[in-house]
Amino acid sequence: MTKQALVSYFYHSAFTVSLKKTLLVFSYRQQDVSQLPEASYLTEKDFQGFNSILVFVPSASAAHHDPAIYKWKQSFPITYIMPQEAAKAAPRAANVRVCREGDTFTVGYSEISVFGSTDAGVSYLVSAEGLNIFHAGDLNLWHWREENSLREIARAEALFYEKVAQIPKDKIDIAFFPLDPNQGGFYDAGANHFIIALRPKVFFPMHFGPRGEIAGEYARRAISRRTTVFPLTHVRESALIDFTGPTPIVRSSAQQSRDKREEDASVNLAAYVQADPFAQTDLPVQISDEKSPAKE
Image (cartoon, rainbow, N blue to C red):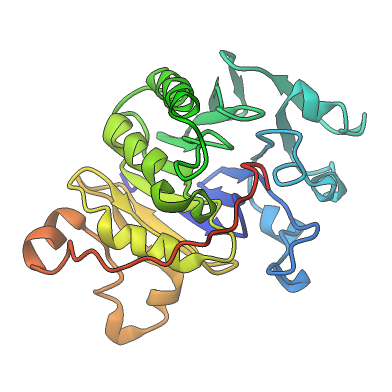
């Protein structure tokens, strides 16, 4: 039986995951995002054909909670899932399911487990149609080694490791996790630990802002037999993931448009490590000195 998911990137931490009957919308934001042109907004045309539409809001921050999500017609089978602090801003007419860390419940065809964060809000693990999808929200190893004290770094690490330890290992098929270059030289420490500890099958970087090259370079370096790191860096860029075989096959929508590169669009890192002796080349990454809060 074919088991597939279509993942589409919008901006920042916003993704959709399209399954046969279910559409998952994570952390959607279009307000004050100049990189997301109006023609690329998520619209009701994207909702047609689904029996269940779940819209996940990780926190009340403007980076994750955009009022635009309430403008979609409520005649669609939409359920908004969010923590209490975000639900305060939701209109009464919206079908909102309020949640908190530790909750587990079912909506439509999906079972949702709510996990913690190292910043405001929560993270989500969604089991839908035979696949497990995790969205980290602002869960990350948030520290700046160039500025924080050793004690502050130790506290941040202890909290992060504690939160990650609560998430099931070897259960995640698709993961969305922050990779924020504003953190400086250790910007990928959280992502590295997440992949090593939980071993998701397919990992999509997020939270990199306009620095798409950061996600691309991380995918070049994060070589693993268990996890495929796949960067989506352009608005509305999509990836079709086939979980039918023992190893997921990921095909980018951009690559599929090039007939001569159709074979190269399939990413199988287990074979890639052996076939390409330069696969682990560590090219330099230019890190911005600018610091910003985790939620921005």
